[in-house]
Length: 416
Image (cartoon, rainbow, N blue to C red):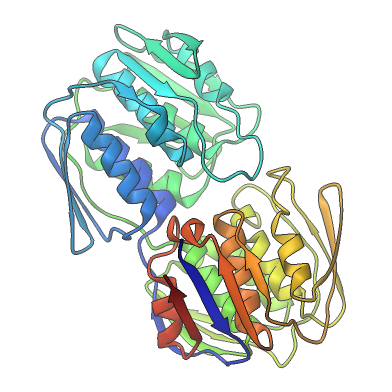
């Protein structure tokens, strides 16, 4: 099992280019199920999750080829409507095959999802929506089994905004009979990107990026030719790394509008982050200012940046409160940051972080994807050497992170 070793205390300097967004490419790959033919998706990040999704689509009977950050998907023939546990257990996004399979074939059998152990992410909203669209859905032996001769348009209200639920039902509705309204829908940029991709395939969708999305069903969609948006969480993670190391870096290929809430908080903490077009110039302060954050659905501060921000606040000048309102079990990185000398106390959904002058390198263990990134940020800022175990979590969501950090001057290496 690979580990990452970091000798901290080096100011990051130089340029880095952001990869395509993991949370955008996975739904785009499943959207190709809705068409028959060859789809091409560009700006693909080479990640473990992308390969897992590719293997799942191959299991369904599709041709899958990844080369030079481009995916070719041949979706002419579907030989299976079954998404087995072995695929779905490692990646929750696998559930996104449910809506497209049901819409195209009238049947789908998908294992209940897995992924990072950051808290309950129930599938009930997906099922509720499909049932309102006329599907017969049963849960049997850990699988979702759904059937519908043809889905019908419906008005679906989400009790809480759900990204994968919005995406799954939006894809299902593109081939439904009639109009579907998704109310209290997720507004994340990845949802808007999926809608834009579906529209390029011939779908009739309005309102993506707002809380109400209208989908008028069509009879067929054409194959997808599309370029993935940059990964906003990767961009924000590099801002955090520069902030924690008093760095001075340029970030290329990002969409500043996607990370406004993060940049606003970074600015409050003393970070200088100036953007022009698709580039950011980031300078970290001599010492960060302690500020409070609360994770919220987009356009609020994203839960996927909570752990990295906590690593920053661990060396800030005072006390900060970090409130996690999305997932109930997303403070697992706290114990590992404490091993590095951080002063953090957790009570319920709030962590009180008292900034210390410096962190100290230590052996630590990653517990999920973003926790891994927080330990990298902490290791870069710490004195001494940090060894991070279980970095396969990191490989699920960051393309060649240690190589990119090396280009910025970090003393970091992967240990086989």
